[in-house]
Image (tube, rainbow, N blue to C red; front, side):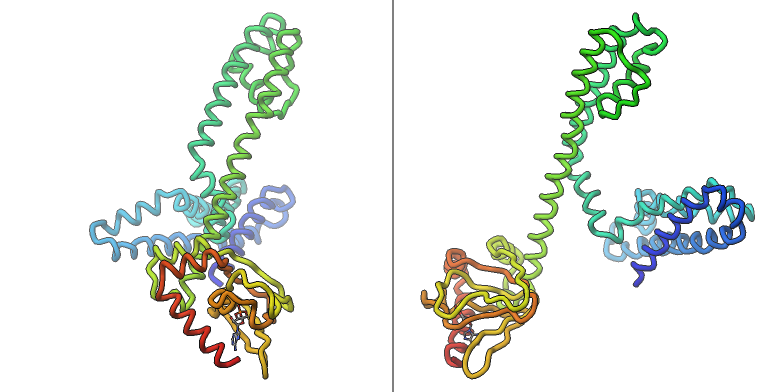
Length: 359
Ligand code: CMP
């Protein structure tokens, strides 16, 4: 709820910041704009003060740091500065009783608070942070190319167009727009050599500018894989079968389990079919078709173990009755885990023997 209110205020503040810059808004809605600035400003101030209060609370868990150091850490962090910046319109309003309309652009900066509430956005920030060295290396290469090509073009074109390519910094403007393939066309080489250099700059620009996109894309895939591993880890930990294990052993088991989501009404396997894996239910429900009535298995349960233990075909058909999320353990990994964790094997055997009795 708190999260939704914050997101609501961020979007409202941004829209308000954008529209308050229009002439219509300035001329016609000054009274309303005054009230809106007030409400939004107070909410952001409340958030800022609350974050400072929360930062001061962390000290209870870190005895060797002072309360002030935690408050300063928050206040000087990027998000802390943004939290304060978006309060500035309110401060001006309170001091002046009025607000210059251009100051309201600060409300659009509240969009930078969003990653706190939307996980996908935080992921982009993470990827950029993790890949910072590679991204910096690409940026450095771009700067080197920029300096070299701009200097070359200045040397070649200055003679032909002294008014356009006045200096290397002027030529660098051309270099930036060409390397990034924007090409404003306000500075164009006219000599043959100048055009040859420009053509090379464009081709290298296409290749160089694509590299950061590739780095970020691959960083994203790694990040998503890490998220998946973490969520599998959490699921494994929640199973009663694994509750006695320490984190290291949970990680070992999580690394061999594959997540699978199956819609409702799908037959996972038929009675008599080959037994190649067992399944742990993370979310959802399945029906094991046994006589006299089907048995329903839900979150935390497992099935498919009898076939693996007895190296025999499936003893029953299993169908999903809801959209179900499983972790699947293949026969090969089942035997490896059984060898390393006899206690888990015994528990599985115990459940299987109960089921065999009930059959
Ligand atoms: P398996 O024989 O490999 O395939 C069918 C699965 O259904 C079986 O392993 C058990 O995991 C499960 N199963 C069989 N009988 C019962 C039962 N009576 N209650 C719950 N699950 C069962």
